[in-house]
Image: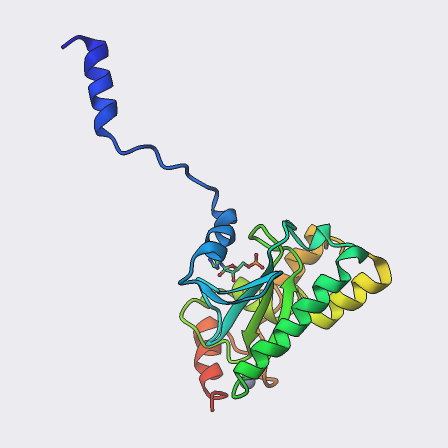
Length: 196
Ligand code: AMP
Ligand code: ZN
């Protein structure tokens, strides 16, 4: 076999190259995956968070292509209203749990998404101080605050790197009482004391 023929042969034996998508596009895949979808309306899809940070953790995504909170303006107010209605609907599904809804000030995943998460924060996927502080400091923008900001200012501004750093290094504090744990294992153990 000639060198070229050999090369062609080897290439034909390999599986077709998968089109590798960047990890930050993962929500787009999950939005289409029936196993991930919790519920859906004409304008929204609710998926189960793949790495839930609490017993209940959903992501609510508009079907409209909006890359992040930074692309929102006043024309999106009715869509944000729908996100609020969906939050209510999810709360009705889980009357036994204390849920909160909001957005990360600097999202890591592309495509606008609202977290709906239970306050227990009891999950093996919750591992780091950054995970904790991203849901329990003002890095987490509650739904009502985002709505107000959009109504007042017409946009959501990016926080500075300094603010981001400061929020992520905020000392650990329980989200349900005044306890200040020394480390994550102590916090996780403590959280169990709040579970009914
Ligand atoms: P954010 O920091 O607001 O961008 O949060 C993104 C969320 O998406 C995190 O809670 C992740 O656990 C979750 N996540 C990451 N990849 C996927 C995926 N492929 N499908 C569903 N949820 C994901
Ligand atoms: Zn506590």
